[in-house]
Image 1 (cartoon, rainbow, N blue to C red):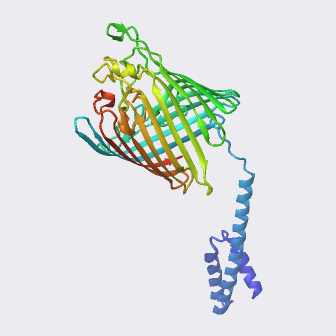
Image 2 (image 1 turned 90 degrees about the vertical axis):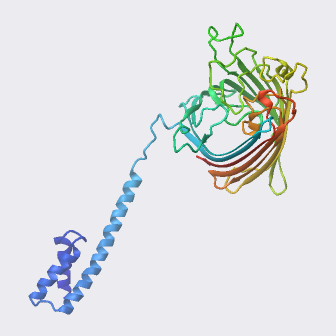
Length: 443
């Protein structure tokens, strides 16, 4: 009996495809032996069971051998390297979804009440040249405005807001002593958002160096580009303007930062007739009489339970602010030539917590004050007071990190006019209220 079982099992594995045809081969042989009277029904049933046990054992052996072979081949296979021209490339970006509500009161008493659903995309890359201190950066963004990357949902599903534009394009040199960036790049200065909108990228060259506790940063930036032979204002050919900036930032390494800064235009007489769209929230096609000095300060500390806290603020003045509001040719002209004391700005804020990783959250509250001739809406925060000057108010923010890559935040911004009698266009808005609810995915 055992000899017969062995013969049948051998015929199964040698005379037919392994495992796949097991059942058919076994049945054929058993049926032949039954017809010849060599096997009884009980013996045939026993043979089927024994053949099945042998087949299953053989199947397990084949599977184990195949797995071992695959693992061996995978382990010995060489890794696939990144192409040499891409191995030094770093990609990053973020996508933001926003609910934006605003109520802006005009000085005539009319209200601009509006709700919008908006989105923003930023896609950036930095290529580090091999064995070189140079790198090249590029960032694509939605929207063309200089101080906003937001595009609106709505418009019967059109794609008018879905274009991508060059937000940054720069060459950076990072040596042992100096860091130099040329092109269209992010601001390297320590400034509160009240003075520098987070979407604003400068164009020109920045230089910085660190000496002990001090970091010195300077820059020369192109505001506009005019054809002097064609563009004429008041019978006089226009000249290009530039923005010059310099900052000395000091830190004690224990949370205290003091960073005095100077900002000034070169005094050209350009009217932005040819270059750029200058399409900010409250942009002014005029960038003269601007010589600002400011003193940003920050102090960060922890309490006994490890909770992070931060106090921050800035005070500053425009040394040419009175000239700005008294010049009849200026859009800041308030209707008389004896205006004064409209040249100061300040903010004071407090933040509790620091939302950087999953589960972390932060709260902040900030008071802002910006007189009519103190600054320019071309650089200031476009969300607060609609980018207007002659405003005082506050900003309250809550931020929660849902995961390491997704955060949720709510921001409420309120402002009101400082001087109700000031009617020049950059600062004639009344009460302003803005609510921003954001969800941001960073990658």
